[in-house]
Length: 233
Image (cartoon, rainbow, N blue to C red; front, side, top):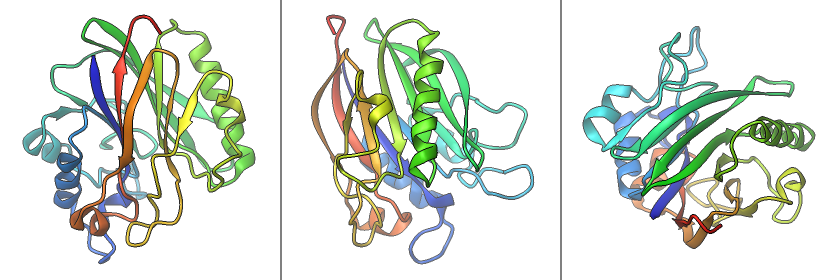
């Protein structure tokens, strides 16, 4: 079973021209052609955190559905994050993982099935300080340890500038891929956006999605990975 996984920090739909245009973000998401997308900064930091990226745009302009991680709020997701799932891919369970740190952070966990094979996606937007990022990764590992073993992919903005350090809590069970420079979008220098794969995922190719629209729509470029989901690990 082959899938394209992606991660995209949409910067509350504010582009480098300082204009908030959710439609541009949707167009970039469609350009990437992924089956599963982890999104960061999808909500506004005001009041009860209304969605910066409206659900109706995703429902009418894409082939994705959005698991509801925050039914009690008008947000698209939870802690500014959402997961988009291509229609036809079954999701059987979702969970929220509260993360430690000075600022409120949380991870999203979705478990599903594709081609008869179970999989788990964890969407993250880790903290600005490495000390707390390490704690947050450890908390994610602890949350997963109580659940059924399955192929797991962690997608998101890891906020880690180093290409060698800062991934210790994942090192024994995940291969962390930084597909390329994705920040800032106009002239990328940092590999902040990453995709971590456990056994069960086989990486074919990975990269950064670069287009004229993507360079304008957000301060990050999307990253993607083409993977194969296999029952033999």
